[in-house]
Image (cartoon, rainbow, N blue to C red; front, side, top):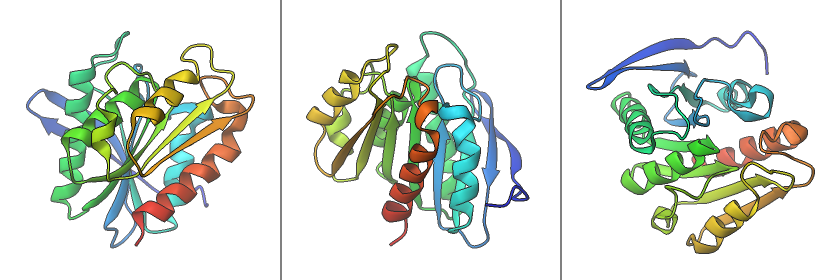
Length: 207
């Protein structure tokens, strides 16, 4: 995609303070992907800033992207506060008339995305990247919406058994992709991952 695709910086005014986001909004979009990072937040995501690249690719298919930063950056992450931020972002998209919403979250953000989907039935499906299991054990309640688990086989921060376990307790429809040679950041498989994410959202958010 062209690097001339523009985005808008947003300051979403919540009862708990400002939530910062970057919004890629193609004309007449009715679908969007909300993207969240690990405990340190930010807009870039894993795999050497894969989120802006994914947002640009989705733009070309008419799918919007909201790259959302948590209000609170901490280790361990504050799950409840992060879920609040994500649900606020989802409701912002719904108010804009975008009612076909996917999530993708990395590490701590994988658990945030799973629990946000459990609590908000308007979320259409999600991708969990190298997720922790803490805070994600309600994953079976995501069904019947689709969920994709992705993990690097060389991840020593959160071993791939985390995603194997979450996949095992999730209900269908579900998928598990384990990337050979990838560590927690997934940067070793960036291009493969970018194609995987793009094609999964294209399949599951365009009807």
